[in-house]
Length: 483
Image (tube, rainbow, N blue to C red; front, top):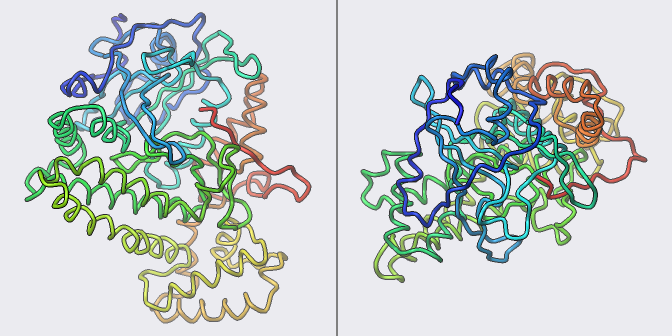
């Protein structure tokens, strides 16, 4: 145990849950830890001593030493993976506890890639440097895009090799989250624990994320409503920036409404709702256009897990839950059209606006327009040479859009100034991210560090090398479950 706290103030409220929800994990040291990327601004926001962590914290962030007051826990959860139910759990992640900031904000501190746990099955519990760098840059880009997300404090190399299809450099990611409670945590409780354990978990989730719910007539139904609202808002934000999670299993859906687990995720280039990047999603289950439906599917599983505590009578419990779950599509649509309306400078959504938004998307798909660059061009009043902008269909649509902007009492210039604050000039383009990570792993971090600076300031003008889509002759981008 280290005597230097680096500013961490730990509590371990998760350990107040019944013991079946977690297992203590022994220290699993690595050979030669070294911090290779560090999030100084996040450290400062958390009230941590950034300089001390950089100078002396590698051993702690790699899991070699235990901080005073910290725990060493692997959380138990279950989940539907591509529709199939499995018993899961933290197979390579260790929860150190909850850090309390000076403002009494509470954040989980987790080490991802810290070694084997009881839930590792046949895995080694380790992670490779490349995927950890990927989660670091994508999660921080998501935060800069104002999308709720877990965040990354550091990536620490281990000085050891791990073996997948080839030998890879090992690394540990320090992940920050409002909590790591998942839909899958509730599925675990409903399937493998006692009813009172499920009730205890629900109380814990409520106290952690919305204590006011405890005053509701049916607090568990109110919890269901709360999680639906959070996820409807989250998925709408994903859709508004062309983000494709890639693996929307129930163990990857948080109760907090944060995006979690950046494995086979990617950002869409050409707009096409059928876009899939994940190598394992051969049926398109988690395609861009299917994400709202998959969110509803996952949330239905969440509702099912709550049935035993919603009412003692199963039929009564279903009668309570079903109408709430059925509100999700309209809840999502309201969030979605609000987000998309902002991208077009609309201050509020009127009945005709949905048609205006969908018509543009239809033309974008038809003319194979780049999702991000199209909305940025509209924000800047640019007229690129791409087929969409030269088409008769777009020119007719544009006149309707401009008339709609004028009808809301704002000038076109004012609308465009607003649009530039919600339409990023740059996203983490898949081909650039891969190049940057590969160069970093080979010992050349310059491009990665430059890209990190750009994607964490996404609304500023950027060098065109970061905003241009891949060339037509570039091979299709494929992502893998490596994180």
